[in-house]
Amino acid sequence: MKRFFATGFAGFSGDGCVARALLLIGLAAGMAGAAEQPALLVVNGGDATLDLRPLPDGPVQRHWADLPAWATDVAVWGDYAYVTGSGDDRISRLDLRSGAMELDWLALPAFSSAWGIVIRDDRHGYVVLAGMNAVQAFDPSRAELVGAPLELGNWPEGCLLYDDQLYVAVTGFDFGSFSYVDPMVVRVDPDRWEVAAATPVHENPQALATWGGRIYAVCTGDYGPVEAAVAVLDAGDLAPVAEIAVGGTAGSIEIGPDGIGYLGDNGFVYSGIYSFDAAGLALLRGPADPLSSEPTSACLVDAERGAFYSTSYDFAAGTLLEWSWPGLELAGAEVVGGGPVALGLWAAPVVDLELEPVTPRPVAPGAMASLKVTLENRTDEMRWVRLALDLFRADGSALNGGEPAYELDVALPAGEMVHRTLRRVVPAGLAAGEYDLIGRVFAADGADDGVQVDAARSLLEVSTGQ
Image 1: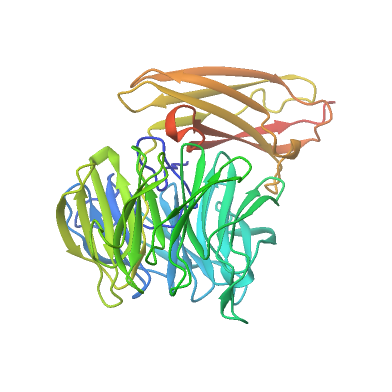
Image 2 (image 1 turned 135 degrees about the vertical axis):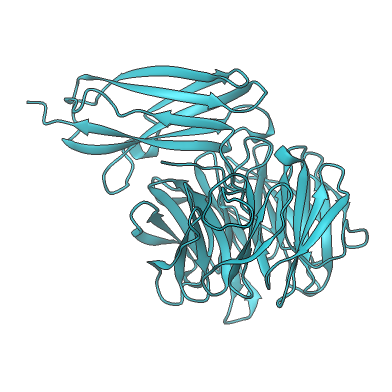
């Protein structure tokens, strides 16, 4: 089974690739192994530990699990968290119910320096290999690398998924000249496995966020005369929209459902939490007037519980700060592990998708097939969503060049389930065998339009037709 809601806020948000490690997970206070949503997870890259904080009241449970060396990012699917280790070239998998950690879950190429990671569904995940200047696909359900790495540019880091496309921040760092060469944001078509667009941006883009159909890249600068800025791009064609001058050395980014963005500066030159207006494209608080002067490595909005979290970076022992949201009054501070590196959010999806197996089983090419779909709106508000269905071969590759086999807009009344039976003719030329029919639900209204909410997988069995 699946559960996808990584790094989400305001009901629908969930960038995946998104570069953070504070997760809402199912774990009871004080007892690793008992699953009970929600809880808070903090990944610490300095001392390679994971801390857990039950929500809403805590307290933080230190060193709940070991992590790979120099952990950089995390993605969650089902009852598992997948953590990248840039120091030992691997993805580790943590069972969030038992606390068992598979440190060597998936080996990556030597010196690849794994960075950002996102999960699209239980057959498709993507990890940024900064040391190879590339991104690599992998299968979360089989612990396998899929295909060859796709080259992007010098030292990519953060990534996210939006509208079924993969976006990667390419810092441009060149070890030979010790400078930033051709920094850019890249859009990857994950089904065609090709770079669909690339746009030059301000120096050293490290992390990405999305809001209102746009991609926001926080560009740290060169830690010298070139200071930080936020590059704003159209998500569709990556056309430049604006550049927001920030100052300092901000390196992390989060945007709340109200369109207020937050930037963390971890104190390499400056330190603090800055803010900007994502819609108005204006800096609100910068290095001269930060919300906090703490060296901040990551920020996250949890609108459902009315909280904003930030981590103060210290290599020996960091601090998790909790703020009220949207009022931003400091509500508490707790010690966490050394060098917290990122934040993320995971919880049961606000809109849940379930797919039954395709019938009949098997179905002949050219015959009619049926699929029963259930969508549940778990909020107290009306939601518009878009359901997209895609067919994949057993090796995970997409049919139809990645174009959806079926799309449907659905209105979901507050707190209700909607059932649909979809009927389509199986393509006459489809070879016999088993296929994955993967459904994805995207927000279809407001600033979250295009953000993936949930995903599920069904089975299509095709007979020889004889």
